[in-house]
Image (cartoon, rainbow over all chains, first blue to last red; front, side, top):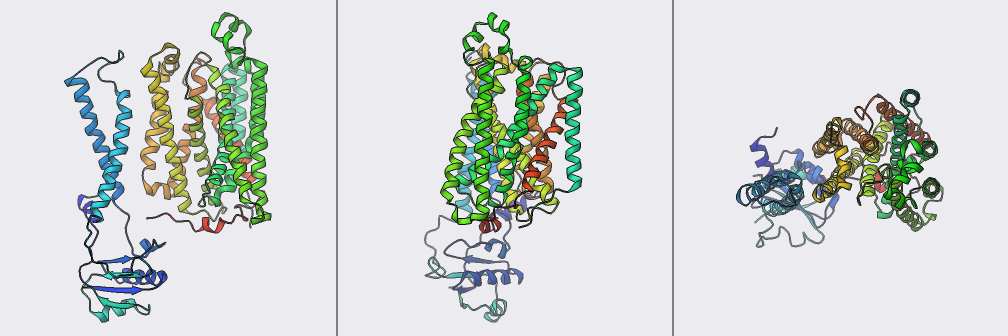
Length: 181
Length: 388
């Protein structure tokens, strides 16, 4: 079984680039190699910024599996349970009415509603979780490089290192290294 | 491209399974002919579902332009090779019509106003003609699709892809109509007084469910003996998802049918379920819901299971057997046979079906290159990756 701490760390793994170093690349292959080197150097806080999805980048960065599916499962099942209790309260306790000669507690009639609530609330809560966990609402972020959304690839290292150490990790890949303000 | 060689060990096991199936049917016909005719019908229908599922899969992948599945398309087309045995089974069923279908007895029809009303459609000559037409359509259209796909190996890009896609589209339409009508004729007419509008969809969901299980078992077995090297755990992951989809789809369709019957509470609909819920059948139906849906659903929800061949093949064997139990559930329920519906005879017939299907498909698969070497998307399919 997974511990609560593991789930929490997995969910809140996003790091906002605040200080440290940025390496700028012009080719995706260079970024892939650099990400592998940074991962192997044991650096904890780093992230990649690319204009398009790059195959194999998540592996090169050593990213673990996302915990968002866990959110879908828990919220879907939890909301379905709440919905079940709600129907039960209305149909059996608060306002019992006979429909079509069926007993007050008719489980087959609840299944479509429970199914819909599981799917719908699972979907809505997943979308909400992605927005919250990925900090998608923040709009006043300073771009890490002006052309990182068109033809430039950037790698941010947040650990406290000197310029020589960063250069040593990334060599011999050709890149431009500058501090992040 | 290297051809696949069926290992002698596997071939021996498959012939053994066929022997078990034949022996159980033979003993069945000596001791309990009524039940054995039903078992023969179950065998024919289950083999039919398995062999049509591959053609359906290949056609869907071609029409939708899917690229990930190119490396397993040859295997899915090979399942059509089991159709000749289905033809033999259907031929045998023609001799047992009077043991199986109550509308085939003139005296029963004379006493029954509803059957008289339906006699224009449900009569022996028309039944035989219809079944022969379905079979010829499946056989020739399926083989034409396979023939075109095999031509790609030599012609490559000279064979226009639009021709493959158009043939697949026609195949899918014909498949949908013939499967719907065949499920009404072969299975639902066992209980000609029952009304439902969801039966063909239910049979189709069973087809996709058991067909996907069979394909997963074939892929993993072939890989174990050194074939299909291009199929990686990424492709298996997608096949696992495909199985997961149809586990859910089956439950959705089955529940929809049962809930409508439960809600409306009409005697001409409810007796179908009542027969399947009283006495020993109640346990069978409960067993069925747990192992056909709940257990595979919970297991296949996990990503690691779908990516590990050793765990995936275990789930696939369970779902294949439950797909068989589904056919038994549909066929046996209407015939008021005594005893538990999954007895020694039925287990023997299951073994026989697996043996016949495995042998026919593997033999046909071994004749041609293991992947469509002329397909322009082959290289892309080899490098297919799932996101983390």
